[in-house]
Image (cartoon, rainbow, N blue to C red; front, side):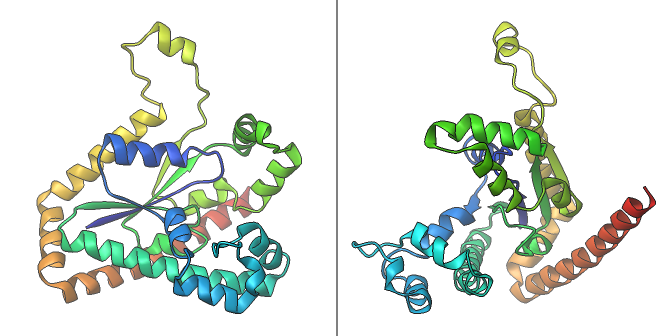
Length: 265
């Protein structure tokens, strides 16, 4: 089974790519942001652990999680932030693994894991391919203000949110594929030429990417690997472990080379 990690940043276009993958290409997608909400629903062991760690003041009167209250407590203190991440990330990963096992048992060939923290959380090394939806920081800022100014977002708020995330150029070093979403939209051109295709559009980039995944998993080698991993689970687990170690080594070489190139410049 090909597990693809999909990541990006605020207003980079990752949600658009996720929608295209699910709705147009009908590929299963695990959204870790959705899992993050599910694991803290009332009655879950994760919410109980959070209350034990941070107090009952993080709950709403109806027993649901008060996210702003938890944020004020956790993000102002590095040790509390680490405790929050330890509790929630563990629960999210467990649920993700069970979902992946379910897809594997059903014989699914391709699954996409959508998370903004693919690189930061180290999940990239367990993915057969890491895909980054990229645009410039300037484009991110413009899109955030265009989208959320009417919700009270100021330019200072937007810049603060961007500063709290990894720069997308830094994430490029971990990506096997970069989808370039920096091209400005020109709806008047699309309207005047409805029959034409923009080969650089995000939609076309996703189309080519999915077509390659399907060719890859349908090849003789791809089918053989899938059958062995599916029919003999211990072999599949060993293959996954060895693959992750190889990826870790390959990326360490890539990062070292990128650092040396930056120094040379």
